[in-house]
Length: 554
Image (cartoon, rainbow, N blue to C red):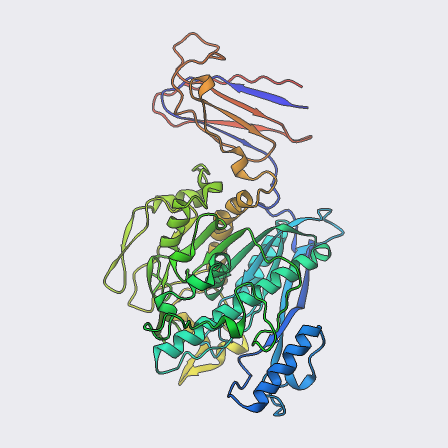
């Protein structure tokens, strides 16, 4: 049955109409923890381990590279000595890389093509506690919480590990920068193999290979942004800041002749064992929480839509632009562009148009937009001003603290009684104590509140970007000039809202009253089978007079 709902509204100011019904999959939780399946420790790739390998140039290293490359070409297994860091018969070591997959139980849920969110954990590209942190694994508390929450909403959620290793204590910035950039680059290659594995095994998990989003937290945010923007390495990897010697523009810190292109595939005698399996690594949206973009020039028209959560006073990953500071050593590494910059640019390029028209009204959108153009003192003595229209940016404002102690990731939490919490990372300083310096109010309750914010702001935009059923952007409409600029709305289901503030007068389909009506607004929608429809009208003017007429037809 089709229901036609026609409104003739008389008012001086604004009329908004909301149509709402039951919980909406992908926005609301529709499964319980007992109704989701978690498959842990799924090995998605094997590659060279830069944490345990000895890369000193020797005849043995050359032999190892040749042997492993030949085995990779043949798709053969790697011998046990290459997995054992204690086996001195090989210099080059390999490691299995794993992921955990969360999804609704295939028996309970009949959906066979579920959208996918791939989670990249934080950790400064070093393992805990070497990184001085409680974070840095696919099983981080936040990773588990969010992946479960997404699975309860009907998604396939995948938390992946990736290879780690660089030299944060090198005395010179060139070594720190070069080893870190290579660590990020390897992690992106790993992430692309994870996406390919998810696509290959899509039937197992009920995954839709054409609706995949990346979510990166902290270091993982650098990955999610680079994954979706680094596509012209001959230019983008040769910016001056990526050159060991600015007077030699032909040499980058990233040597693709050794580690392979951004696609992730290696070749004979390279330090990369991945081989082309014919599966695309394309994804469709990128979400960042506390990371940054390597360079704004990487972002181009046509790149995927982006959403970002960023503390305005983040001392480690700049909110707008600046130098990355590694929390482990508090040393400077490389200049980058933060969320305030690249989300605004994504909008300027039209990349976020798919959800730019979402209406106000929900608390998360209202909060984000209320901060546009606001300025805040920063701990370095400067000022941070939120851009004018960075749709997709949720700025987080916390009280100003001394430099390097401002809260940058209030969504993180950990168990203070866990064994890792009591490991000393400096004389008399445990990992728990060290991490509290930039998250002094850490608690599971605080994390839950910020997780609610992340999901409340991100998921409607994700639903729009992936064109999921009942996404809120399918309900966003523009003025209808055929009815004197009043609005016409067509929806299938889900919440919808609009206003007729642009209407200019009584329309030809017009008011049913002769009292000088000024605005008409018309809606057409298909009601859900067996579902109740609730219509609410809100008059925000001081002297408004709203009148509603409803017509139903089949």
